[in-house]
Image (cartoon, rainbow, N blue to C red; front, side, top):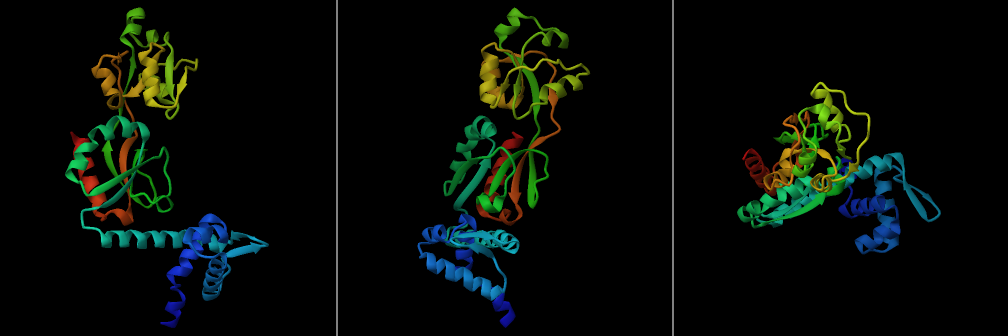
Amino acid sequence: MAFQRKLLPSTSMLMAFDASARTGSFTAAALELNLTQGAISRQVQALEEQLNIELFTRVKRTISLTDKGEVYAKEVHQALQLILNASLRAITSPMSGTLNLAILPTFGARWLIPKFADFLEKHPDITVNFVSKLAPFDFHSENLHLAIHYGSPDWPNTQSTFLMGEESIPVCSPKLLEKQALENIDDLKKLPLLHLATRPQAWQDWFLQNKAKPPTNQGMLFEQVSIIAKAATAELGVALLPKFLIQSELDKKELVPALNLPVTSSFGYYLVTPHEQLTYPPVVAFTKWLLTVAKT
């Protein structure tokens, strides 16, 4: 029992160490925890003595994590987040709580948000916070419960649930087609091709899948689907875009298929959930709702 107690430091020690590790300063940790710098320093020193390891290297008034300290800091932070989440769940009603969701900006703005009122109506006790993320991240350090990800289901330490695939089509303004009739792929090469920065190989893959040689000239590059869609609407060229993300422009006839040659991506959209969040009621409720909506 004595050895077990040695391996279970007090929460105050762990919080002082965690804050110091994250901020890189005893002074900054003291401000965060509303303690004195001396109190933080003593708590960390007591932790080092209890574990019999050096967690920080101290040079004058600066500190830096040792190799062991860096590993320990990551695991302690994860443990404190688990305790925090458990406490939040304990003091809230079973189906209430906060849901922190990472979304892809375009997917969120053009597909998820227009449908989201239905979720809020069904779950009024769940508060949802949105954060935009374009690439995988560390769930434990970000304090996020879920993420919507485009790519492959290969996110470590998570469960990836398939939402939908993606079919892209070449689109342009109908006015552009009036000026330049398109009957085949060779005709398409005569027009400017607009490229999406997040998918720089999309046009090349499209040409290859249609057994055609890609053009050598590089067209304009755009960072967001909304902007490249506006560019295509303004007759600046032909864009290769996911059909479901530009459905509004297609319905309004602002954009039309330049050629009826869709291509299906090998990637997909996934709902990514850390293993420790799988049973959290707001996560369960959102997952069930999202899967139902994705099928319609």
